[in-house]
Image (cartoon, rainbow, N blue to C red; front, side, top):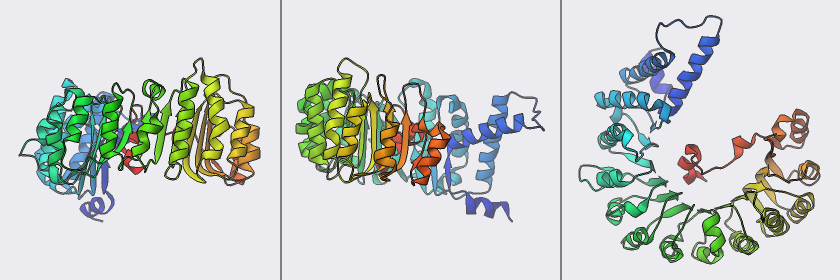
Length: 425
């Protein structure tokens, strides 16, 4: 078979980070095999040589990629920079890419060269559809406001992570230029009145699909933002500082399509009841529920309130529930009894300090009734149900698949994969 036809038939999606990882795994396997590897160069240089050689083969054989995703961890910045330079030297490769995804742009000064290379590739490709932005947003603002860049007519999804919007100017002008933008996601960013005012000034809709907050200093500002964008919001989350001080059930009264709720650290009984009321009010659209409570003075009280009230207010079917807190037997039994007619596709339980053994109740109320499809349980010692092979087999006989906790957990704290795919929830 002609090698050109082989690549064009089988290679349609290429993720630079996955390429780096695959080469590293191959090298480890080859090095530890009975044949071994003798290169005369350092391991890192040899891995980089293999990676670059593969990419040169892709380019030489004029691969027509459906999607190229530019992504890298810190340890692979040198490799990423070399690949980007290689791409820029072979512009036909860029034009043969159907969809370009950028999961990289960061605000630290050490990566200016890489950022510039990515910007040039975006400019040459002229069909960027999705981008994930870390940190400083200023450099991207300058690009978007430049008449030399054409992504204003292709970019439909922007994900902001850990961006300080308080230092961003002309934000309204940036969004006004994005003509086909359908999905905006803001995760762990700093918002203020200035940011909100720029959004309010927009003449077009601000299609905010996700808002995951770790701090809010001005409640009125957030209310104005959701008044403009509430109809689009699907994913909402908040942490202690904000959730404890404000009744978010009142805040989210503008939002009728909440699909995911993500709560971290309940610290008061009042705020806990407020969140229970919120879940009750939006249960018709709710599909993902994530509740974390860190071990603090009121932890066991809040956990008990949740378990005693949650079961009876949930919708009849949920795709995902994650309970990450201290669980007592009696409270958990109440939850299971009140939710006995509810089907949960993925149930995750992470037991915090002071929790009881709840496996027997899981078997009695969930396994025998086949109320869950995927199950993951992890305790304070990081011991997992997945490691108990006899138990895993027993659950499998009841059509319940036990998985590792890390395989199922949704985590927005510096986890690129979940952040990048938030629009798929």
